Image (cartoon, rainbow, N blue to C red; front, side, top):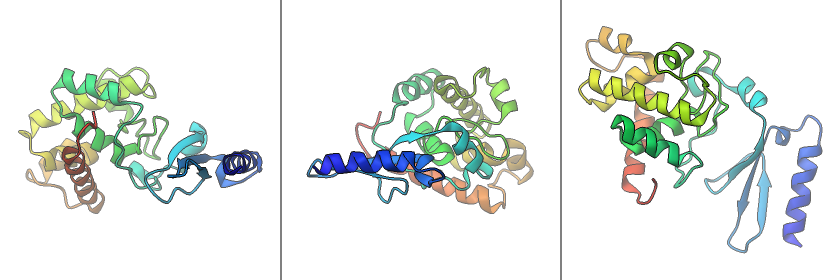
Length: 208
């Protein structure tokens, strides 16, 4: 009966004109096997089960503003692509996963107001330079992000703080800052966030 009520609640939410639930619906199965649905996930157990790319695009702010806090997901639908790109370019899979979590929260249709797009939030010119022809394709977007991270790792001698600062603000801004993280609040917060996710993923086992 509880399962039936939960399903009815989902159908009602999706059918309600103008409701926020029509944009994104998350589900969670509790310890009793009861499935709950919401458009406002309040813990990491919820997973996105419905949503539209177009509406998610319109809600995006600059480089991830307005996106729900990244979830420390043990597995994702993109792990195969993450492993392949990481191996091809010699980038740690957990680095790719941490950047992806911070940039798009694993949303392949995410688009910022500045034009950063997809799972790795590639700018159009960066995507072209990385030979990404379909920026919304998860495999191509992840490979483009991995290739770009490889270039930044080489440019900044593997210094993770500088690599992440360059990914967020551009390598030229890092060079103009004398080889330090630029004094840009957004960039400094971004570096801290990704490093935190990176360390958290490293401590876990079986992620990839």
